[in-house]
Length: 175
View 1 (tube, rainbow, N blue to C red):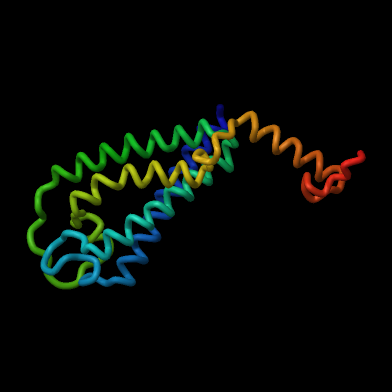
View 2 (cartoon, rainbow, N blue to C red):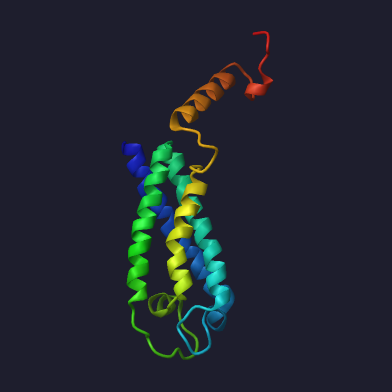
């Protein structure tokens, strides 16, 4: 249980760090004019489209970290639920924000992060993208294998390694 909780927390921390780094790099690469629509704080279509992919990658990383630590599919489901709940709450909040007015000239990454607005489609899509990314990264969408099957595979692989076999396929069928 503790591993699962730690896995969910560290998975979410990994998402947070990845999003901060990736979005900062995206804004540096695109620059102010490429990141926003002209004279507006609304993200450009280019920025939003690339951001969807980056969010998927960040969420997949978080799901992977969660599964690596927790070693349970249930923990990956839990981080997906956390992402859904926090994502929906964040989206609802962002949809109520007032227009910050016109944007003039170059802006810092911090100012952009606090004043920018996303297109409605992007705001609604983000929790969905986050949940899918975490489930994919955590392996929770693979062929329906259970935690018990995963533990059995790990134990079998460990036994193969102890016998000096690199994989179960290398095992001598006569032994």
